[in-house]
Length: 97
Image (cartoon, rainbow, N blue to C red; front, side, top):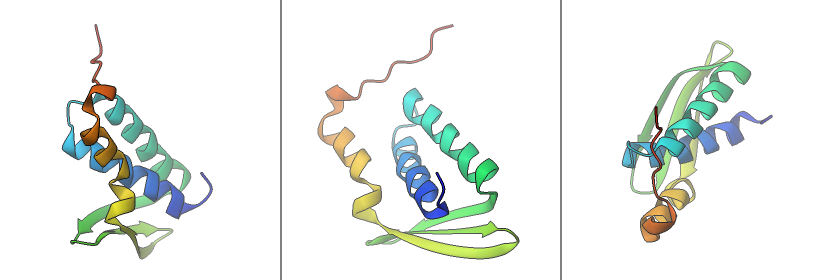
């Protein structure tokens, strides 16, 4: 992922799913992957998320500079809404030891 904006979009989309479905192991693994991308490839730190009725706001530090971006809620919540509308298609398969 070359663009910080794209990496944050993907990270936030799956973070919203993980926050709503903490038992979802596939979502957690995916979030962990995007965490690595935004931290190791893009060197983002101090990531903070807030929201209102319309937008998600993400602030972060990149190369020593505080930056902010925003995403429409309807775009970020597409995956979660799809899961909620058809939960039988998104079963959780926990790890087995």
